[in-house]
Length: 251
Image 1: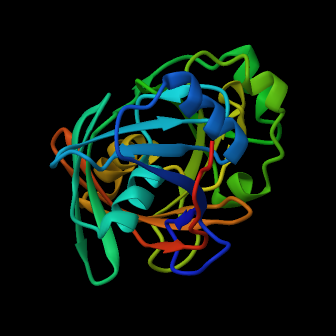
Image 2 (image 1 turned 30 degrees about the vertical axis):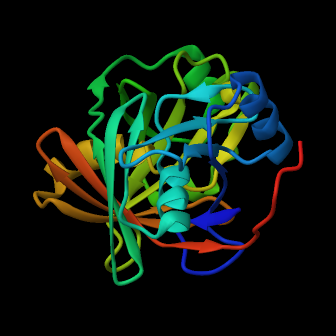
Image 3 (image 1 turned 180 degrees about the vertical axis):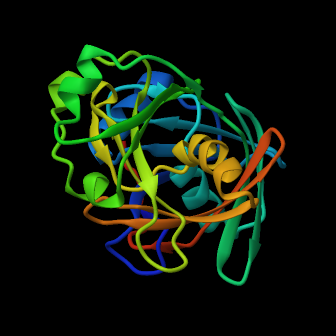
């Protein structure tokens, strides 16, 4: 188990990382993920040369892209690796205790506010709503609204797609962006730190700031920091990680 997007244990986003020395049954991987109960558990084939086959499962479903579990996997394997995934080949590099991941950008296009979104985000002054491939992005009026939000998860579960990102400009020096991410329909009411959501956040905020490099905070209870760099249709995401448990699956 690895805490990702943090430099200390028991913060950031915990991910399971299962090292496989051969093929694994999909139902078994889903059962392991349900047993682990992390937002995502990564399964990586270490009997290959790079790019290593990598898959991610929430407690209830397989997902196409996961940032924090990719960061966790690269951390366990030594940082600089590449992975073959549902979202293509993802390359990771390591420097000065940080792992940087090369991900596809996921820009969001403006859409109309919907009833489930309005019901699911009480107290949020909505400045914009946009749809990305994975998530719906909602821009709030302030970081305070993001931090203080008490969402209605049942309503958010009715929003089509993977989940909902709520975001606003940062509220302290050096911090550009604040966000929180909700995935109740995938068995994750609130994700602690969502790397893949920053593929959308970087695409949304970078043009507004007028510079490629941003520092983003995901303001969950555990919290975490993500460095983002937008380059055309790719986003580089950087974070730190800490291994907290090593063990062996016996079934």
